[in-house]
Amino acid sequence: MSKVEDSLLSDRAIEYLEALIPELAAGATHAAYVRALAAGHTVLKVEGSNVVASCAEGQQVIASIKPRRKVPVGEVIKVRRLNLDI
Image 1 (tube, rainbow, N blue to C red):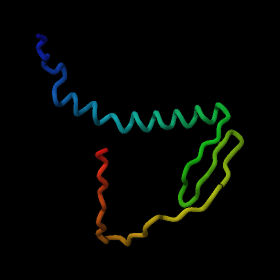
Image 2 (image 1 turned 90 degrees about the vertical axis):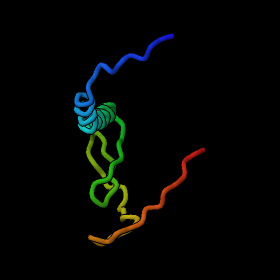
Image 3 (image 1 turned 90 degrees about the horizontal axis):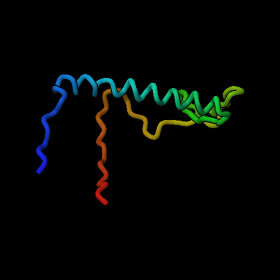
C-alpha cells in the first residue's frame, strides 16, 4: 500500500501562496480582457451605473442599471442562503 507523503510545503509557505491568488486572478482577468479586444471581440463590463460595450474602436454605453437593493450605510441586512445540494 502506498503511504501518504508529508506535505512538502510548510503552512507558512501555503498561506503565502494562497495570498497571491487574488493578484494572479486579477492579472489573468485583465489579460483575457485585452486578448478579447485584440481579437476583435466586444466585451461587456459595468462602469459605475452603466453597462458598457468595449471594442477595438472604442466604448459605447449599452444600458443604465441600478442596484437591486439600496442599503443605507450602517443598516444590517439578512442574507438568505440557498441550498445548493443537488
